[in-house]
Amino acid sequence: MSESLSHKILTSFKQMVAGTGIKTLLSIVSGYLYALILGPAVFCVWQTARVFINYGTFINLGTPFIIQRDYPSLMAEGKSAEAKRIAQLGMSLCFITFPLVTLITLIIAFIFHGDILFRNSLIAVALWFIVTIPAGIGTIMNKAVNDYKTVGIAEAIFGIGSMAIVPLIYWYGFNALLAGFLFITAIQSIYYFQHRPVKYHWLWESTMLRKMIFAAFPIFLVSVASSVFASIDRLIIASMLSFESVGLYSLSTFIASPISLAVSSFSLVLFTQLNARYGRSTEPHVIEKHVFIPQSVFSNMLPPLIGMALIALPLFTQVFLPKYNGGIAAAQINIFAIFFYLLAGFSANALFVLNKQKLSALSFLVAGIIKSFGSYFGIKAGFGIEAVAIASVVGYFVYDSLMLYFVHKNIGHSVSEFLVRLVKKTWVAFYILIFSVLYVKYHEAGFGYLGISNKWLQLVLGEGLILLISFTFIRKSYTEVRSLIKK
Image 1 (cartoon, rainbow, N blue to C red):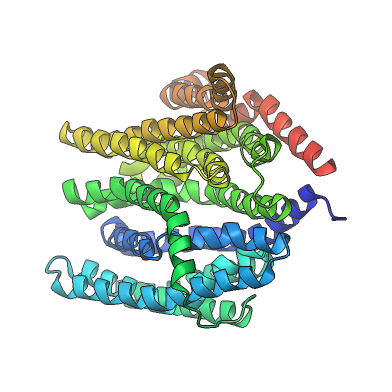
Image 2 (cartoon, helix red, strand yellow; image 1 turned 90 degrees about the vertical axis):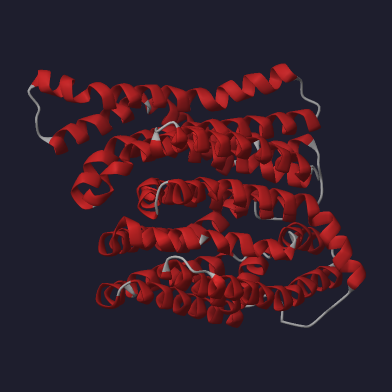
C-alpha cells in the first residue's frame, strides 16, 4: 500500500466531515428555527417520537455491524465473492424487516389514544422505515467500502433539505415537519440507490444468516442497551414531567451536535480503515490504534471546546431561544456526559475487534441502570431535569471507565496501567469542569468588581480565559495529530 494509513484515515475523515459538517451546521440552524417556531412543548413531541426509530433498527439483530466489520476484512483478504454474499444477504434482510417494523409501528399509532401530535409522529416514523431502505443500505455499504465521499454528500443533502422545509413549517406547522422529514429521506434514498457500491440482489442463505446473527448477537445486545439507555432519560422526563421539559432538556443537543459529529465520524472512519488495513488482527498495536491514540488526542482537544460552549450557552440561549432558559443548567451538566459517551466509542470499536461485545453490553447495562434510577429518584426528589443530567454524567463516566478497563484486561495490561491511562484521559475534563463551575458561579461578581457590565464583552473574556488555561492541552493535541499524519 503506497498510501499511508494515517493519510487514508485523514482523507476519508475529510470527505465524511465535509458532508456531515454541512448537515450538522444546517441541522443546528434548522433545529433552532424548528424549536423557535414550534416551541419546546410541540417540537419535542417529535424529538421523543424519533426515539422509536432507534428502537426499530433492533429488528436486524445487529447484522449491519457484522457487514461493516467483515466486508472490508474479507475484501482485504481477497475473498470478494464471500464479501458480496454477506452484503446481499444483509440487503435482503432489510427488505423483510423494515416493512415489518412499519406495520408494527402503524398498529401502535392507530391504537394510541393520547396526544394527536404524538400519534402523527408515530405514523411518520412508521413510513420512514419504508422510505429509508435504500438510504439505510447505502449508509452501511458505502461506509464498509470506505466511500465516505458518497456518505458525506448524502448527509449534506439531508442538511440542505432540513433548511429548505423551514418556510413550510412556519406556514403549515407541525405536520409540515413530519412530511418534510419523509421527503428529505426519500431524496437521500434515491441518491444512495444511484451510488450503490454493490448491486441489489436477492439472496437468502439460512445457514449464513444464522452465523451472522450468532456473531452479531453481542453487538445486538450492545445496540439495544445503548439505544434504550441513551434515550431513557427523555422517556422518563416525558412520563414524569412533560414534553416541554424534554424540550428544555434537549437544549444540550445544540452544543453536542458538532462535537458528536467530529468524534463519531472519526471513530467510524478509523474503525473501517483499520479493518481494511489489518483485517481481523487483534495484536496490541492494532488495538492501540483503535483506542489509546484517538482517546489521547480527543481527551485533550474536547474539554476546552466543551468549556467554551458551556460558558457561551447562557447568553446565546437568552438571546436566541429565550423559551429554553429553563434548560440551561441541565445542558451545561449534560455536555460532560456526552464527552464520556463519545470517548467510550473508541473502546467499543476495540472490543468489537476483540470479539468481546458482550462486555460493551454489560458496561452499558451498568451505566443505564445508574442513569435510569438516578433520573427517576432525582425527579421524584424534586430536582427536575438537572438531576437527570447529573445521573447521565455519572452513568457515562462509569461506562467509559468500564470499557477502557475491559480493553486493558483483554490485551494483558495490569490494573495499574488502566488506572494511569484513565487518569490521563479524564483529568483535563475534570480540570475544565471545575474551572467552568467556578466561572459560572463567580464571573458576574468578578466582572462587576472590574467594572465590566457588557454581557458580550464578558463572554469574549470568558472564552479567552478558557483558551488561556487550555493552551497546553490544545498544543499537545495538535502535536500528536501532526506527528501521526507525518508517520
